[in-house]
Image (cartoon, rainbow, N blue to C red; front, side, top):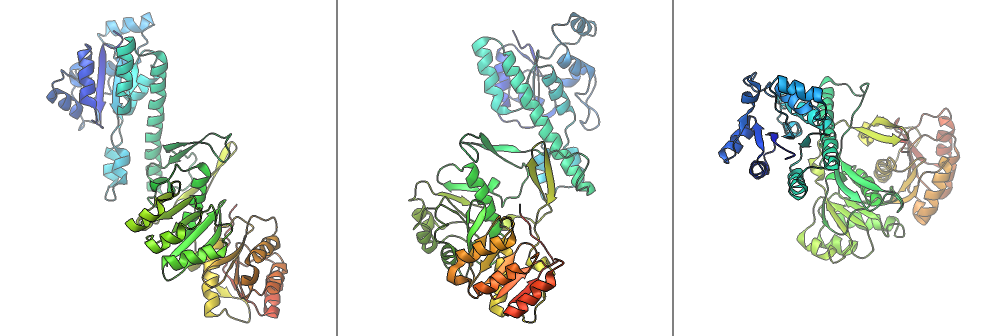
Length: 513
């Protein structure tokens, strides 16, 4: 028999009683502790208490019970070494062949809004990770299980082959080390946050797999989607998909871009995104009006795009959305009538995200590079955080102020160098990702066409020279918002005054690479 003695101590009791009963039916001797021992005993399983093995009582409120040579020697002894077996025999230690352990619910504890620091500390497991690591290290001789999903894996293989194969033991051991590494990462990050350290000497992140993806950006690239164990609810990673086919890698990136823009607005807003850049943004008195403006901003590019809105989708808006091919619609909620309308489109993905549930918090954005990563604070600063000042002779009109604010909120999310035009509560032109700023301005103006006349222009960074202002003036743009800060600001200000353009400085740059 490959398994003669098992140690079972689990926080998650799911499925443990039937699993233990099947082990016992195979003649396995079971050691257990605390609450697990009680549940197994009450369920009719013969259990050896941990104190019977160690000859030492559980002490310090249960903090010390399995940290004992009689336990860890039984886990770590190499069965193909005579010296190890001799030492076990000398000290009357019985080998442990199977370890079934999962850990104190640290993650679940710190997720609770009223958790105290003391509660969190008490839910840091010590003995559990020690047993898991010992058994996983000795996987040549010991089978270790930490996930209830693997109970049937072990039983099926044992029943079929009479043993647990080396490949299975190694796979389960790898899973254990992933589990303990993730567990320790959560603890390390929680304690680091408590100390206020932002960028410590080492930084460990952990993610949980949400799904495998068909492929990445291109069909020849493998990909998967992971989410933070404790992440914001108003995130694509925590979205609920109501309808449509599975999200792709590019869908997820575009959806994240659309969501980040729509979060900028408190009034009804609709955002259309293609290839990580906004192609149309509209605001209005209601969602139908906002979406109509987003559509009119660029009726060509919106085709096949991602739509994010910040209000419940009603039937009227759903009918409008249904008129063209869209990949995804993201909203806080859909009315039942709206769902009935939109689900007629078989492949249209419908996602709900609770935008009002996100608690503002300082977060770091991680960008991977080959062989490393860049960390930075998320760019959460907006119009109200900027040092707004009018630098030209003419102040913007009330209408221009409204369009300047819209343009400034959106240009922050456009790939640099970025220029964005807004007119009458909608974007009308977007110039993204160009190597020089005047090039982005020309693209935005060309896209806007006649609607460039009287529009407001936003730039994500300062003008290094006056050429962008000149180009804006030629197109009939009436107001400009930009960070300022160039050594040649005066040239741009003089040119704006000459052309009758109102220009506002914000003192805040919004590069997005």
